[in-house]
Amino acid sequence: MLEVKDLTVSYGLHQALRGVSLSVSRGEIVVMLGANGAGKSSLLRAIAGISEGQLGGQVDLSGTDLRTLKSDRIVEAGITFVPEGRGIFGDLTVWENLLLGAFLPRARAREKQNLEAVLSLFPKLHDRRDQIARTMSGGEQQMVAIGRAMMSDPEVLMLDEPSLGLSPLLCQELFQNLAHIREAGMGVLLIEQNAKQSLAIADRGYLIENGEIIGQNSAEAMLSDPAVQAAYLGASHGAQA
Ligand code: ATP
Image (spheres, rainbow, N blue to C red):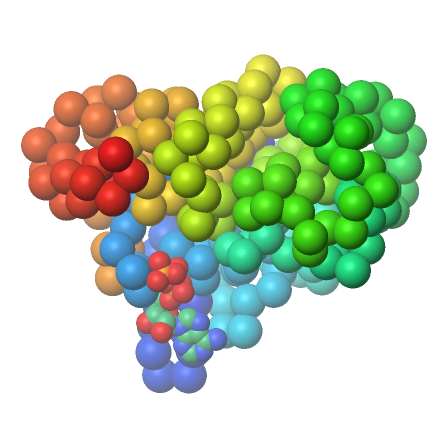
């Protein structure tokens, strides 16, 4: 479904991504693991059409070439990005945030079904529908952000560190919710520091280092790979346990 081939991103002389290739299929959760500065956000921003860098390579979604499209057309084509820090409209209510997620034609036709799906996943958003979004807790705001992204009816949902700043309990809830999103047939491309919990719900994972993909495997194999354990699982376990 989402197919990235030989993607490069440069910021002036600094090459942040080199020849990155990856794929995400329907109903699949794919995790991208990498240290700070490895190029993870640059990757998602390039796919979403909001990169500040110079791009090379190919990004296709179900046969549509996304490289030629502006960011709103990319959402219309079926990719929605939830940036780090959530990107919700803080001064609007929960309900307004959700409905704004469905403003493009693609999403309008399925607004009712998608709203039902979001509310069955996050019933709290119905109870809090009139609350101003910025007054909600971090975990609740994350629900709004993911709910709003689901309202745009994506084929692929991209999330940049959604568990950042959440308590261990809320992290657990978040990952369980992401596992449910997959059941609806969406593909999920996830950047996470929390390697253990994200790999536990993922199907596959990639390792990115200095702008290059240096490994990929099933999530299960990655969880038991000593190199992955040493680099990502020890630290993440310590931070989140
Ligand atoms: P983190 O986990 O710390 O968010 P990351 O893996 O998401 O890191 P990126 O934010 O993609 O990494 O950054 C990759 C490299 O590109 C870094 O060296 C960063 O300083 C640089 N970079 C990112 N955005 C820009 C920009 N707009 N202009 C110049 N350099 C940038």
